[in-house]
Image (cartoon, rainbow, N blue to C red):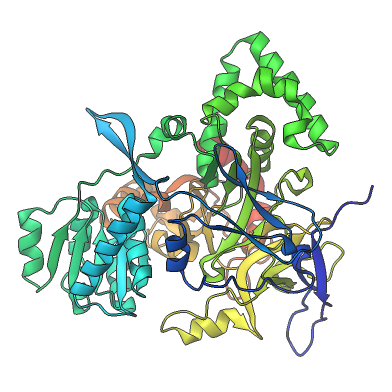
Length: 580
């Protein structure tokens, strides 16, 4: 039986010409073969989406094969192979549904969640928005949000959306130097701040006070903090008591919340996978054998084309129902993003969770989702699926890395085109011109087309990548920092989106090798601006310097990262095994 292909070609590939690399064919989702979806009337901004959620209006366009259906006990979606229709359907939801929740911590132990409904959140958002405007911030102004995810974070963002203000997110892992730069560069006038981050924000003074006039803490404000900001003419306000969620309570959270849709980064799903594997291994020989047998039977059935709910109902009821209960008992969809999900974890969850397990891919510049895998398509395991119906996608060859977009297995830099992309980087026309070429946004990620039209992300063109927990690592910058150690002659730092820490190959300076330990201690205490995930966890010392004879460096001594990875692959694998 011929495999179904989920993309259609809209433009042919182009060979290399005038110094430009070859470009593969342009593809789009098969659901948009007759054109991109029309904009939804009345849905013009993020605020419209939120305001509509007070009624929780969910729109369906069967024309493009995407059906949003009301499911018993919750809201879900089904992708269907359907004929064209020209109608929108609205599913009314109730304003008293729960929207934002916070878990109470009593005597250091996790308690129950306290919830706010859509109406309650909506009312607070309006009040926050009015308070922002009372501070003199007009439409088009900039508000920063500095802290971890919380109900206040969401409400602050929606308040900005309601009044046409730009929301400037500040990662909670950023240090004072980066925060000061962003505040000044984006001209942030008001900053919402997690309580424990207020002291970090104050380290940006007086530099940040060129723009920053108001601070809103998600928690308490001490008298010392109030006195400090007033010295610089800045006003600080407190919010309701703030409690941050702890990832260590993940399993308890899932059991308490009983989610129907579970969105997570791969590291969270890795934790779930590891926890389930430990329980299976400790269950005794009979239970372990029964689980493995049920797993093999259901996986074999799914590979034959059966949907996960139909593959083995008996195994689901007798064996895998306990796994589903461990995930809250109601989960229908697990969506992974921000970094690639390991294939063995994805396969495991597809078999045992009793839910759809999908991977997505997108960037801030593409307004998030650009690719998403199709439910119950096991052939898309390890991929991010086909493109969504509102973008065109092509691959551009990267000769220096050996990737050819016109080969029998097309590989190259992922380029995206469509009306939903960003317009450019703020105050950085030079960077905008770098990534936008002839109307195409160059993502910097290397992709590989699969036979069924799904895409697999296999590499990164730029030397910036994410670790499995979603943290960005600027590897060249780290190599420059670690290279300051006199004992290091040369260093190559490596990491990837399947691992949570960095490793390195180091060519030591023989003359100062005896001082290695002392220099590393000194470096660690003298560079507090390095984050935890930027510290190298495992090191391999190679006395032979990187050289051109082994094709590890260029004539100008630049590192050839793909060649380094190939040469040291065995060493890298051993370091990751020993580091876990």
